[in-house]
Amino acid sequence: MKKIVNICFLVILVTSMVGCSTCSRTDQKDSAADEVGVRNGSKENILVGVLNLVVDETVLPLVKEQEEVFLSAYPNAKLNIIAQPELLAVRELLSNEAAVGVLARELNEEENEYFKKRSIKPRVFSVWTDAIVVINNTKQVDTTVTISYLVQAMKGESADGRKIVFDNLNSSTFRHLKELGKLDKVAGNFVEAQDGSEKVLEAVANDPNKIGILGYNVYLDLISSFPNKNNIRILSVQNTVGEGADNKYYKPSQSTIAAEQYPLRRVFYVQNYQPNLGLGIGFSAFLTGDRGQRIVLKSGLVPATMPGRDIIIRDDISL
Image 1 (cartoon, rainbow, N blue to C red):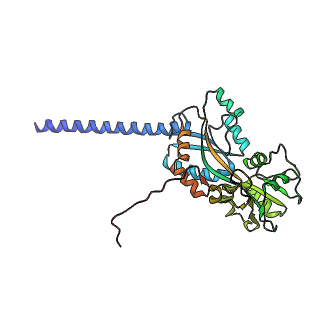
Image 2 (image 1 turned 135 degrees about the horizontal axis):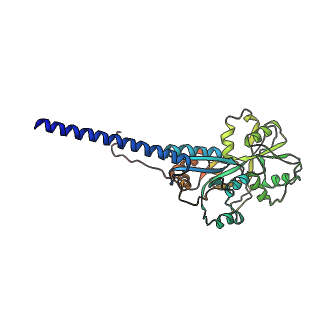
Image 3 (image 1 turned 60 degrees about the vertical axis):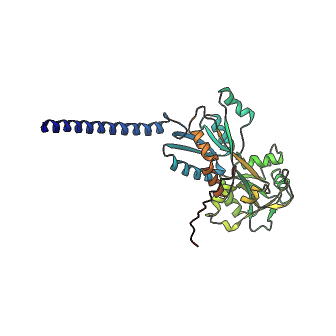
C-alpha cells in the first residue's frame, strides 16, 4: 500500500513539474512576443508601443528629460524623437511621419483640414511656457533692447545696421518675431540664419555687431558648457506686449515668464493626431500630469499647471 502511495506521489510531482515548465516557457514566449510587438509597433496601448514624436528643436533638452523619466516608468514604450525647426516639424505631422508633436503653436485651419478629411480629431493640451532670448556681445554697451528695434532691424531700417541672427528661418523664434512685427518679409542683408542655436551663440560671441535670437530652454542647456560664455550677455526686453505691458525692461526668468512681465513668451502644446488610443495618449497624459509638470518646473520654464506639494505632518517629532 505504501509503495502505491509513493508511486502516485511521484506521478503527481512529475506532472506538476512538466506543467510548471510548460507555463514558464509560455510566459517567456508571451514576454518575447510583447517585446517583438513593441519593436514592430504591432501591439500597442496607451503605455506600450512605439511613438514617432516630432519636437520643436528649441525645446529638445526638456523633451529629452521628459522622455528619460517616462521610459523609466514605462519600459515597454519607445519614443522616436524627431527634432526639427517649427515649419519642418509641422510638415512631419502632415506627412504622417509623426503622430504627435510638441510645438509652440497649434495647427491652423488649413493644416487641420488634412486631419478632418481623415476623421481624426486632435487632442491638444498646453504643457509649458518658454521664452525667446535676445543676446549680444559683451563688447557692446547695450544691456536692453526693444521689440520695435528688433522689428526695424529685421526690416533693414535700424540706425546702427547690426545683424539679427536666428537659429533657422524655419524656426518658431523667427516666426514669432515676424508675427509680432507683422512682417511679410525681412531684409536679407540684416537677417542671418545659422544652423542651430549653438551656432547663434558662436556668431554673437565672435562678432559684436550681431544680436542673437534663440529659445530659452535650449539657451539654458547650452550656455553652461559654451566655451565663450563670458562674451555673451542676455538683454532685458521692454514689455510693450499685451494687457500687462508696463514699458519696463525684463530679463527672461521663471518668475518674469510666470508673471507675464517678460514680453517674448510663447506657450507650447502637445498635439496628438493618433487615430487610435495609442501611446500618444499616455505620453500626453504624462507631460500634463504631476510628474511631467515637475520636470518643467525644475528645468526653469513655467508649467501649464503648477504641480502639487506633499506636506507630511508627524506627531512624533523629538524636540
